[in-house]
Length: 210
Image 1: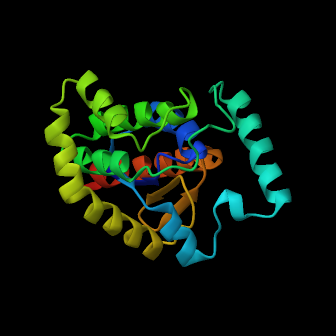
Image 2: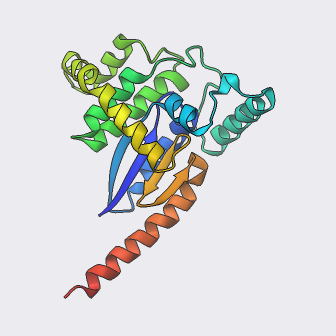
C-alpha cells in the first residue's frame, strides 16, 4: 500500500478546490491517505511566505484570477471573497486531525463539508455551533468530538505543521509520497503519475518475491 500524506488547511481555497479531485483520483490506487491539517500561518512564517492580505496588489490580483480560472476548470463553485476570510479554522482543523487518526474516509467527508461552509455557504468556520452541526449531521457526538479536538487537536496541528516544514512544505495543499513533494491542486497530474510509478514498483516487488 502506498502512503500519501496530505497537508492542507480548511481556510485555503486551493485546498478546497483540490479536495474532491484528490479523493476521486485515489479511488484507482491502493493508498493509505493521511489527512494532516496544518497551521498555514506558521508555515508561511517559517518559509518566507505571506498571507494574501499582506502580499503586493499584483500578487493579490493574480491569486483571485487563478481562483476564478480553477473554479471554472474544475467546475467547482467558489465564493472568491467570502465574508469570513480569513478566520480561525483551528477548531475544525483539529476535528479533522482527531477523526483522521481513526477514520480517514470520515475525515475526508468532514473536511469537504467544512471547506464548503467557507467557500460555498459564506459562513464562519470559527463558529463552534457550525462545526458541531456538521458533526451531528454525520451521526457523531458533537460535544464529545469537540472536547477531544480542544484537548488533542492543537498538539496534532502543531506536530503536522512542524513535520510539514521539515519535509519541505511551504504552502497548501501539499502532497507527499516518500521524499516527493507536490504543491498545489494544479499538480495533481504529477501526483497521479507518481502514484502510477509507485503502484508499478510495488507490483514488481510483489511478483519478484519468492
